[in-house]
Image (cartoon, rainbow, N blue to C red; front, side, top):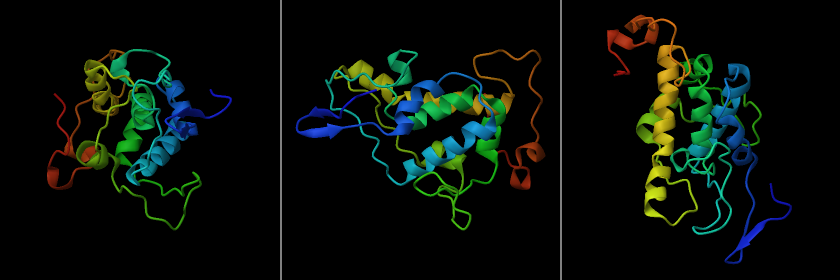
Length: 195
């Protein structure tokens, strides 16, 4: 993407691999064995207050969003990209939000004795994550739209997980009605209401 670090205000800017990969992940139905370890590792890095580097506002580096549109963000925040990937990958999305997380080391290798943080990806994205703008634009409308990119991708990923089909492809039949047992809810209480 760059043959040398981008320099602005005396600071070097060089993206992380997950940022570069994010533009590719926004499209395509991925197998859970491929996308879920990436989604888990990105999420676990994000909970460590990972600083995903981005050039300063007004720079000419436009980001990694290959599909365009300010509403999808620029791609500097890879959490949005992995949620978009899950939105197109219903089986992977269901597993991501319902199965026990795997603990990863910072380098992406599995930590067999570690404790995954967060312990629930659903709770992290719905209740704990601080969504920040994902753009280098100085335009306030673009800034606001990019701040909504992550929550919108989360909604689409949850839609794919609960309906069993990619969010942007209509199902051939109405989705199977979920019961408390199928959702794995305790005491029959719903953990998620989809309207």
